[in-house]
Length: 598
Image: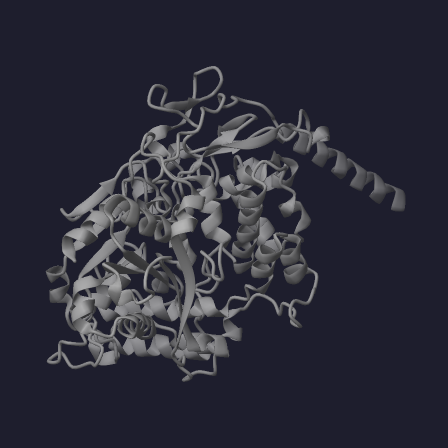
């Protein structure tokens, strides 16, 4: 009997090997040679010599109605970008921009915009500008000890040892990524707290309301756009007759970055809170019930985003360090991390060519050879990352076969208008590709070519804008569709005391946003009382041509600036220092808008 079992198992193993070998079909078109990079009008070192980034904190006790948050949550954190030669008093600046991040975003998601815009305002417009990037309170719950220590040591192994191997840093060890039940107090981290935090930053830093009305601009990226509109219409003492405290009376204008400056957008779909448990037709009674469910834990207090786990976001930060420090070195980090089953599954979803490749998943991502820069590129670039909210246009793979990707959806199906409209705010399969050479055969995996990265300005130029395969028969991308420097993207993902990605997004914020713009909102403690005054403020809204916002509305407002070639993140990450290759589509027009309205 034992011999028969062994024989049967042997047959199964052989069958699996034959199946796996049959599914792996390496080769295909290979991208053409890189073009020479464009001349830089200024460098990152030039910016760093002129611009100072400071981490600021203002004490403001967090709500304790449902448990006591850790002491770190008693502070409002924001990144402040200003000129090193400035007085340090923001009231002396010509203008201040206060910007809120989007869904799953932290302050660092707009790091590139902050430093570049302050530099450009001074050198190109002789303007003293400050930019403040706001962290929401849940960002304080992230244990960044490992990645911050790794940044300081210039060694990502420090982060791996802290998060996976129990290594102590400053006497403490990692206690694990948090779950909803670990954060009962997150039920109180809603819209009121988010609005109060922005108001506290503005009124603390700029005490004179008249100066605020002249110099302070409020804005946001993605979800930060509706939050900006809600701020403008918010009444901070709850009395609609006293207007000095109204949001719109405390700023000079509003700024949107791939968003809509409206308190709520009807996309004919589900909001985050509805998707994860809140009723679609919520009224005042239903709102109160949902809040109680958040408090008792019957609805998750943190938005459970499929595939985008805190562990995954922490891994991306370490990959960004490697890409910044050793861009051309061969990436080994993913192979060195003992990934959880959840994150391993997420990587399989991301790096599968087709459904059969996903099911068998041979070869997996670790069998391919990527440089550190290329490894980061396939996680953030719009030609490889299908999740719309995580897409930037930062170049393309180079050095080996690259073929069309038809997973998680075949591109032919994804391009059907009805399907595209339904999924565009979540998944964008247009122009998706994947590396396809991990070795000459199934039995030689890991011996394929070393894939490198062609930066956004290396895929083409004015005379030859198309980045094609070496035979000239397949166009992978064009210069018109590549706008962000992969080095800038890497920097914003790790640089500084905070980070770009939000590990724990509070469900309460989404629930409150659904309720605030409704008729019953003020009655449940959400004093959005001045919607009609939002349009009295000067506004500018940059909407990415290839981002998720374009397809959310039947018609974009007339004053929207549609920026060509940009994806969702590009409005914050665009490379503005190669004007001979491409003029700034967002940063310089943003500066000019501010100058016209102070």
